Amino acid sequence: MTVLVVAEHDNAELKDPTLNTISAASEIGGDIHVLVAGTGCRAVADAAAAVAGVSKVLVADDPAYEHHLAETMAPLLVSLASDYDAILAPADTFGKDFMPRAAALADMAQISEIQEVVSADTFVRPIYAGNALATVQCSDATKFITVRMTAFAGAEAFGGSAAVEDIAAAEDPGISTFIGSEVSRNERPELTSARVVVSGGRGMQSGDNFYLIENVADKLGAAVGASRAAVDAGFVPNDYQVGQTGKIVAPELYVAVGISGAIQHLAGMKDSKVIVAINKDEEAPIFQVADFGLVADLFDALPELAKELEKIGN
Amino acid sequence: MKVLVAVKRVIDYNVKVRVKADQSGVELANVKMSMNPFDEIGIEEAIRLREAGKAEEIIAVSLGPQQCQETIRTALAMGADRGIHVKTDDELQPLAVAKLMKAVIDEEQPGLVILGKQAIDDDSNQTGQMVAGLLGWPQATFASELDIGDENARITREVDGGLETIDVKVPCVMTTDLRLNEPRYASLPNIMKAKKKPIDEKTPEDLGVDITPRLKTVTVTEPPGRDAGIKVESVAELVDKLHNEVGVI
Image (cartoon, rainbow over all chains, first blue to last red; front, side, top):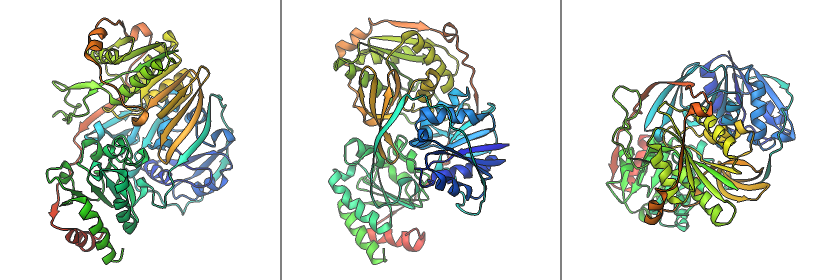
């Protein structure tokens, strides 16, 4: 058995979700190969070759893959599919875009966002925003799988010494063009890989008040998130959104501030190790999942929290 | 340009789903059903294109049992012109849905196909990408902004790091993200009018599509519960617990 993992990268660096996906691949078993499709991406290939457990790295170096457009990625995966029992990619906007297209072109099903490997053909995945778990069995020759990153600890980035092999690019249908991107830049860690996340909800009342969250996040080295209600209200951009329709996070510590705890939000953070809720409504459903709940006005609690954190040296 | 929008009938997003005791699925009997919220956004976008003079006709397509016609009626009441119902009581998985959609699209020849980025029941996030792949059309997933012309469309996508802009050739497939627009409510006169709008009925056999499921659902279970913890009285107590008791800060 051989499993192919599609590496997420920006042509310079291998991105963390790749390591979680490799870890899921190792639970399926067999040899693990990694596909690095990009342009001028040798450093990424070298990084992938160093990941523990990887036995081969395939490099498709071609300008067509620079931005991982689904129209170019899918034919490449299809050209490789018959060599593999499973092809895995992270279930983020990188993998979700091209994987189903590739699966359909290969006339295979896709198993979305697995959170557990039961056996080589059976997997557990969340449905209904994580309110139910489906165990599904797939009999297709090549299993196309996307992986919920937070459910698998990242593989060790070092210790491996895989062979690196160049492969030919597939045909570019030339029907889509990358124009540009606006990446939200901040000094904080990525939401999905942060050890601590502090999120604000509708209770923040405005985007201007998010500095209160940021002050606390700075003390904790935390990422800043938000509920869908806060995003819908225009307080913060959509890439802050934690929940079923946003990002799935599972940090060591999740602090929910002014978030009522709608099902859709809980779906994105309920696997966090420790959950803290600060809300002035003591009936808020968020308290039903919180390890530590504080019924308080967030406009008093957040500045106080920042001060207390300073006291303990944060 | 013709715009074709897929609309799925799902358990209403406000309903707390219950897993069946025999672990065969979730309880659907006597549960409120609605249009998948991302599909409402799709219908709204199509209507806005027509209002801007860029679309002539809007077709709402739904696949599944008889009751899907209620979902199509909702789309017609919002402003779609006509409906297509591919009727089956069999289980439909994303690949089968994509093949059925392709067959309908081959007949209708729209310039733009809009689907929700995911349905809130199975959360697959596959069908739009699969439809585009089978058609050999470009795809713009997780769209938050659309500017479409006769030859090309410029689409802004919501990606993990922020926003990405791509140009795709028309015809194309687009999947909607939350911030594309805010769907309108159907007015009473439009709900009445919608009753007279035509819905074409077809079957998977008519379209020559094999819908055999590829994935077998072994069990559907409740996720492990999370117990409520304790309430703390003050910020100082909270920090003390986090620092000294659980050691996460």
